[in-house]
Image (tube, rainbow, N blue to C red; front, side):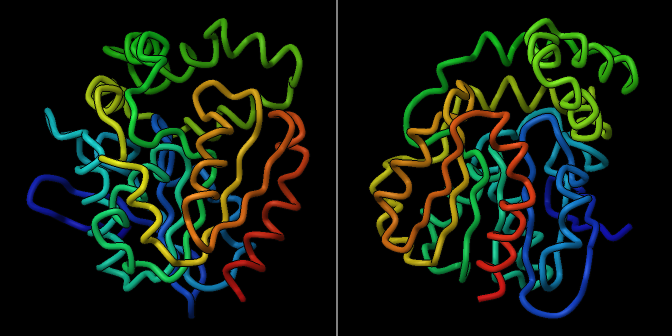
Length: 259
């Protein structure tokens, strides 16, 4: 597999498709470049998926897991492949907002899936620290099973049994060394110095959110949609509605990227 090497990290990269546009995809915390692998073939152009530092098959430095560091990972891959579109989930969306706050014209289009933060401290630190403790010191297989057995997840699986298989795929490349390091640093940081910085980002932006998600508050998407001059918001009533709407999300994202 191709890799992008920077001064402090070795980033694992996978590429789908060909032609224009070139989209860089930035995954969520604990996940890997495989996060959206089943869906990227349905999106036009070249899709460049990569693992952030401390995640998947990328290297895991002892420290350096602030949003500025994740933004550097994103830009290193985007620059290496001449990406003009950036797609980010949760942590990935935060890395993108950090990057474009510094360089508003870097990308021609943006897609945010479940953005989680703006310019205030993260309010659910204990929950994420528990995740770090669950996986630390375990083999990858043990860490995956520990997360899937977390009582918070088990409650959701009772309501949506098929969600367990989705979660297993999302964390299938879990890095039990780097993820605890990443969690403990990034929860003490936030993507933006001032949310008003996003007013300068004029690139067409498609934002996908759901209500009732503590980690990814719907209000974050609503604020971004209000601040960014060319943003469109797709809002779901809850997680179940969002999962049932995956086909529609893919269709809308494909049309957005193709237009």
